[in-house]
Image (tube, rainbow, N blue to C red):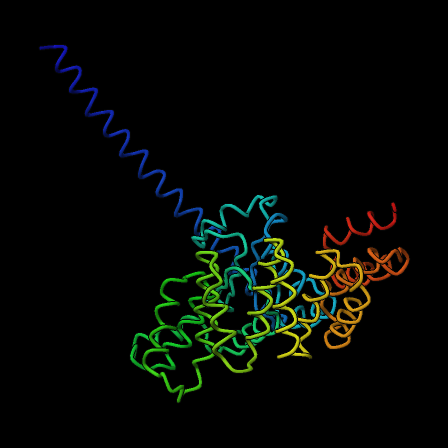
Length: 354
């Protein structure tokens, strides 16, 4: 009997201790959150004094979307002055001690996350990932800066009237930018079903987004192919061609890849994206008799859009494959000047060592 009483006493005290420790842990978490909230608020107030908006950038060197965002947006030589004029960017990588607590504070799952913060330190919007469309991303940043179509407002309007297709469209784009793909795809498809005649002018972008989401989620480019075949000339088609060309390069399908490149170039002869990818395809497949053509294609791409470091990188490899080491070095240095990507720096070493 005494033993049973002792055991009962032990169990009661053990349970009380566990409960006490649990509450201590919860209180510690809340205290830590308050410290982080205070930290963000102070940084937001500091940015506001300079008439800037605070942006918290989560990144990692091994994260491709993170590095693409740096390359195209946050550290691009031609963009950085504009970015720093209006935004105060705080970049955090896993090497920073605050990274993990702040990552958890915002309940994030992906490294390529960007948090936009108002003057009071409150999150007003976020983006996750990056699909490589710098113009669209810069447009989104400008909207957030001006207080237009921020997530909190978009969500409120959508909840007021979820049958309004314009509300659905804006909400779907916001969800896609936050990696909430299932709901985004559902809304884009809802728009396509509700407005088959495209009276509201949202069909093309909705079709493209549905195709892009399918590829991101499943790796299938079926809808992307259908998009190219079914839709007339538009802003998004060159991007669809690039998806297909990249996929065929990765699959080492030379004949179909060149065929898609030709089709894309025929329909969009002034698309810097297709020009660059066609040139890269020729270089990747080492079609030596077409190197002069590849050089002509990539140089036309550069003349149309000189601020893309990857295009200068393509030019450098074409020169290298043609045996012109000096011009290869000059081209890759231009790429590095726009963005000092580790890959470009390694290419420079390769060229110089030859």
